[in-house]
Length: 165
Ligand SMILES: [Cu+2]
Image 1 (tube, rainbow, N blue to C red):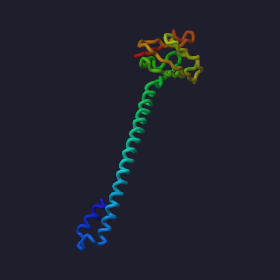
Image 2: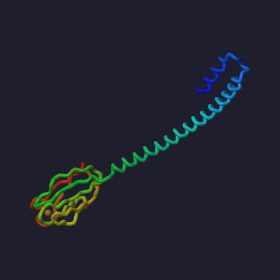
Image 3: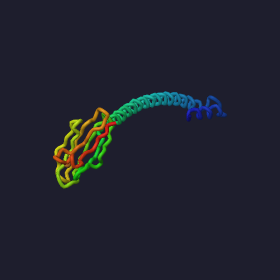
Image 4: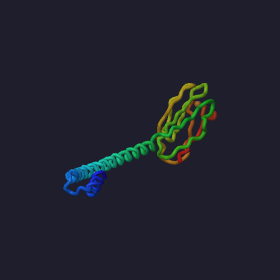
């Protein structure tokens, strides 16, 4: 914008076109031209920058989508406690195909374990105050019995159900 203002000043100069102001005018014109060239080049660079950032932005979006996708397959953590002679809670719910990390905590005074026979899931028997975890994926919807396999415990009431929806 500055070069344009210089031109206006020259045309309004009372001393006429032969004054030193004319030289100034040419210089200003040249400067204006150079400035405009530079401005165009800068504009072009800006466009390139915008493109670069767009590509980077797209890459970030893809990365975010991948992260969300991975989060979708992260195991659902389910906690269950065992004591004499029951599991708490008695019913657990998971989605079919969703990996599950089942954490058993023994809050009783004797050892317990957890077995989901239909899913081939079995933990070691753990001592009071200890916990154990097992990871599995139930692919088929249904109701799967949970039991403690320590002799007599199932009969005493240590049963539950995993509901796969
Ligand atoms: Cu038990």
